[in-house]
Image (cartoon, rainbow, N blue to C red; front, side, top):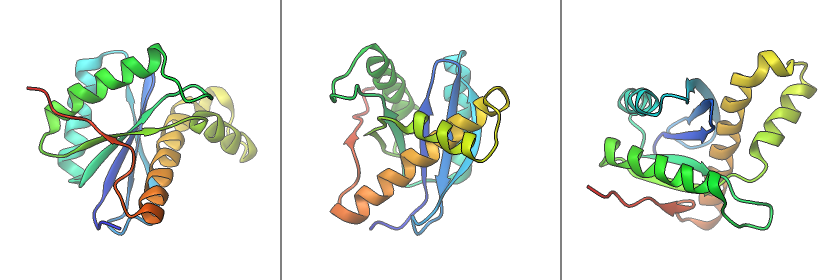
Length: 154
């Protein structure tokens, strides 16, 4: 397991959830919800977070269908991740499967009493936490960095 803090991002149309972990990669925690409608502003805020947290990598959730295919949402996230990778280079960006993370986050928050209207921004952060926990667990089990690398195109 590589040592170092990571950031995880759950990209949505309206909001982008962000989570980070400790340098030992044991516990993922919510960071903030970035407004997602203004993409350039979102990229600028994410770049600030990368500068602040100094992660060894950024993990972006890739929305796949239950069968593993990729639709329009995945294409959008790939483009978002590509631009982010260009902006924060040399910090690597990796895409990881995020199937069911928002559903899992919603159910967990509902179970703990968080109302859906108030919880929308929290759900995005919770989904980012789940994405990061899954990525950390994948690396712990396999010994390899999770998901696929996003190549920087200049």
